[in-house]
Image (cartoon, rainbow, N blue to C red):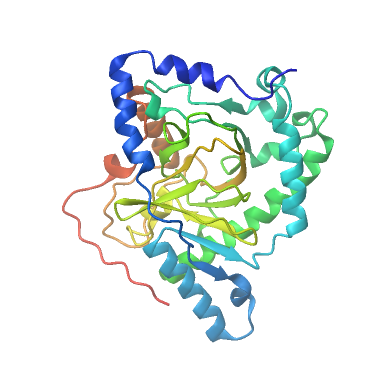
Length: 347
């Protein structure tokens, strides 16, 4: 029978060949296994945003502000995306990843966006045991991208529209909380740079030794995630990894690097990862709200702790870091020294 999974085992085995790399793996194991108990992220009912009662709207906004400032992650219910739509997407996603590996990697499905593992990994602790499709929003509606997956096009178009609306709504709330008009990101966010990422984490025979997705922060303004019930998502809280308890009724929202910059560090872009599982596979789909490449990221007020830069500059720095050292350094190269800022909510 033709295997649908990529050759993750073979690639990982190659990374284990030198003793020096094995030592790095052992160091990484301690980090992967050091996890607190499963936790429930802040859970926010978004019906408050649509309330005719101003106090209820402001209370919901304060919840979103507080979770973004303290956790950098939260979950939302009554978010406006139908359960039936998410279920249809999950079914079509499983069909897509069930296609033989050779076909996924060579047929050009979804605008040639298929990727697996970590091509730049030089050490085992830089390797991700997963596969994904990474599709710009401008390509989601193009029939030529889907080939035989006609039903996938319909559900992806609908989901991309719904997730984009939700992401912009939440970004608008966070912008208003810092005293700016909520449409500010609408002016600079571009469908050509916003994208959907379909993720699949196959069963892994080395749980605790290799990540499903290596620790990272997101290089965007805001991420919306729909995940299945398998678990595996973990985030850094303080200096400790915390396992996120799956909630089938909720979507996960997290702050990206660019919103941390724009907010002068009021909102937190938090490191997170996905751990592997030896018993069951995991599926998720994420929407990333990003600016156009040449948009300056800016700041909610001056002075800013960061120098001026564009999204294109940041993306290039991230790519250069990954190619040279195997991982993303993040915002440290854009941070100024001896800058004092005070960002307070207007809510």
